[in-house]
Image (tube, rainbow, N blue to C red; front, side, top):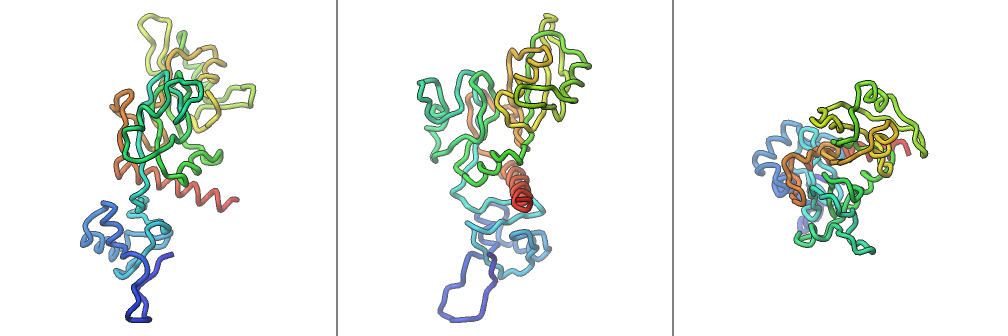
Length: 265
């Protein structure tokens, strides 16, 4: 709950932290620049535009955005991107002794956990964080974050098969369709095709099962995108912290989805 400076006991400490101080600490801009943003009406707190320089907030509870982009004020919350290699299972401790995520997270200065999973044979973008609220929203079935995969599949795929993926295929656990799909290139040996598939389902091994259902089993599979996050040039096995821009994009869609989910619930 936001609060402005209030009259009262002159000896009492004001509640909360000044908005400009909190945003400066979050790396948004200097206090002077933030003050200009406040006066210009470019900052929202809990969905309401604030223009008073005396506005105070609770950085751990209030949701702040600048120019419509969410800002994380809790400096204890951390967010990382991992390019998970093949052969690694998406768990922090594998009871069967298989290679797990600890080999990539033990060197971090904070304990994190993975948001969602990639099966052992799939490589690519995996989000790591200690933000339980964000992970809960992303994991909720109604959220449906878009994920983009690059698949090397057996056989020469045709445009007609791509249309089947977009129209939908029937699987044992119900129908599924790709939001987008396209052929990237046919391999020179004529025996494989590179395909890009985007969908928002979180069902287990869904891309592999879809492609198998249309007659093109997956040979290799990489997740290149998770919501607004792109793997880019991050090397296999490398971990990096999200940039402020990436985090803002992710938090913005997560907060909107959470608000809609609560509104419908």
